[in-house]
Image (cartoon, rainbow, N blue to C red; front, side):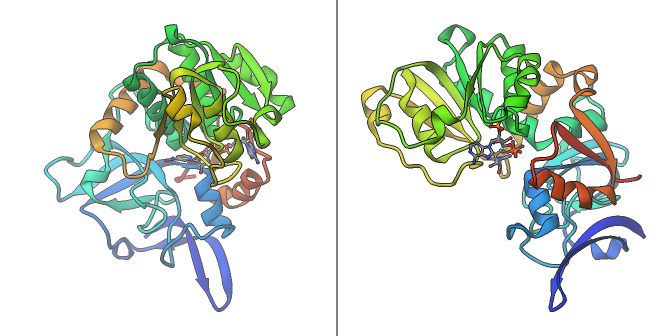
Length: 327
Ligand code: NDP
């Protein structure tokens, strides 16, 4: 038996509890992992509270990411004792997830934990840091460098935004943070932002083309914000778009793309190819040693994550929430 969170939905309603299951309840996969840490992401909070239909089949263990040690393996790629991590692939949505002491998954969803990264460090970075790194790698692949000019990060005080600001600053970029959280300015400067703008400057309907200001952007907000960011990118620049905190719509014109050669780079972390994941996590291990992560991550127990999910959706949490599933 092992301890886990379990989300269920039936005639009695939608509910999440901390319970015990048997290994036979884990039907998917060829590698059994003894999970050490998971983390609480926006999607997990939606799954735990039922605020949006994230979960595709019930009952379900939530948790879209985890780190741990291989306990049994029918795969040639991983052996007992290997340290591994996982993000996405429908885990915690379609397949039993990481907010659990055990997880059974397909071997090609796992990657080896980078050598100099601990399981706690990996989940302190979690899907937010990994997604931010995918955005940065996309901008760099496109040809953007610190010499290209300023990079704007929207939703800057959020999970993805905070990591984007910090990582860009560590990589030598000049970072403009767009935020609606006036109480988070010191936090953003500490992360490495060189300039802060009020998100209200970007969130209302704007013009098809606006003053050219930034060489690139990482946008976790979507909607008018993304449209205005595209309209304000310098000739030949690019925007990595990964989120929809303002909305899923994109009320934009083609003008920035056809008159300024701006590119919109879509970022999905869930189904991303393993080779890209390995590169992103290796780069994260280089840039974010454990000492860098202590001030960002709060560690809670499995049962506490039910209450923390509501707080996260109410905007009452700053930084990353790591879940010690054995506590
Ligand atoms: P958070 O909730 O931590 O951060 C979102 C931030 O966006 C907030 O902190 C806030 O920042 C800003 N924001 C919130 N509401 C609005 C609004 N109405 N208008 C403008 N800005 C707003 O979420 P995450 O950082 O974890 O995720 C960000 C987005 O990225 C989400 O939409 C998430 O679903 C998506 N995502 C996508 C992934 C992918 O694979 N593509 C992977 C991970 C996340 P501030 O107060 O600083 O303005």
